Image (cartoon, rainbow, N blue to C red; front, side, top):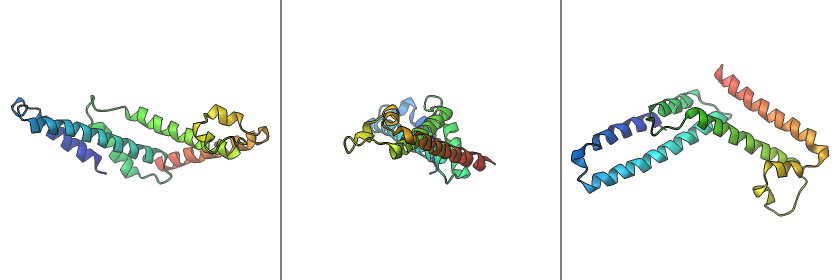
Amino acid sequence: DRFAEAIVQHSVLRDALASAEYRRFPGVVGLQQSMANNLTLVQQKLSDRLRVSAVSADFDPEKYEEVLKAYSLLSTDQAISVGKELLRHVSEFIVAVSRQCMLAFSSRNESPDWHKRAQLRELCKSMDPAHVVACIVQLYEHLCNFLYRQVSTLS
């Protein structure tokens, strides 16, 4: 969970091993490749933590700040936009909640796992028209609750 420290140490070690004098050692080349893989893993965990921070009901400002600090320490060739990543996570959350809500109001029961493959449009079409308003109300409530959590954690 100490992402910033891991990224700083990675950068220090990467820079130290970049020297031409070490390139003749096969073990160092292997270590450099392994470090790149480990950095990818750290970036994935960092993204996961950002997702949890962004959409969780248990928002922890200290963990969120640690994530933002770690993103700021990534070099430009390593970093993805934290804003784009945050937007992606929030969008995925909204789609997931929408799917769950629509499934609850779906009247279609073709195969046991049809809902896993169904797109949002298919889920909408499968809904009983009498339940559309109730589904929209529930979606609206979920969205308001989500936005309220986000705003209340900022104040």
